[in-house]
Length: 177
Image 1 (cartoon, rainbow, N blue to C red):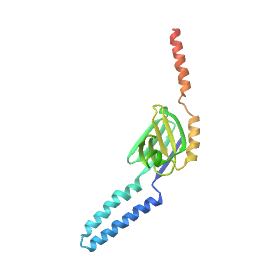
Image 2: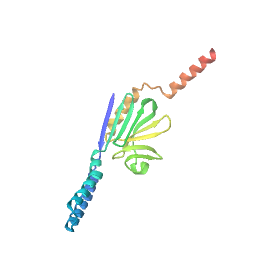
Image 3: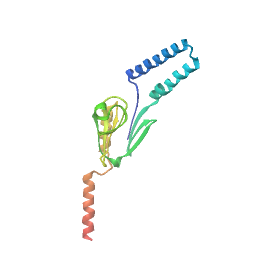
């Protein structure tokens, strides 16, 4: 069993905003060129803007992979997190408020927990046995929810009840000896 999802910044308004700023930088560069500024300085300024704003936005990617072993989330090139199946107490696909709960999109740490999200308001909520909460944004909530249902049914990891019963058996065996 394997689930894979890849997300990139594809919000039209974000790209439009960046191109409006690029247009302003180009217009300012043209005005400076008319005022006598050397062309190489203008090319350097526009190039730096492209390198610092446009290229990273095109390269940043949120990758979610779920296998029998657990969940891996990569917010490339900044962050990578591997969560083993045995660490996961519960998981569900839910709606959330990116700004209200996490302060926006990206890799976020907030009182609600840690979030890895690119856009939208649907995500995979994980709660770990140590109490940590992790939300991973998704653009395919129905497909992910179906995969999670099947993944949880196939669980080889014992539930808390099974662990409690096993511990009780071991204690009773120890007392009998």
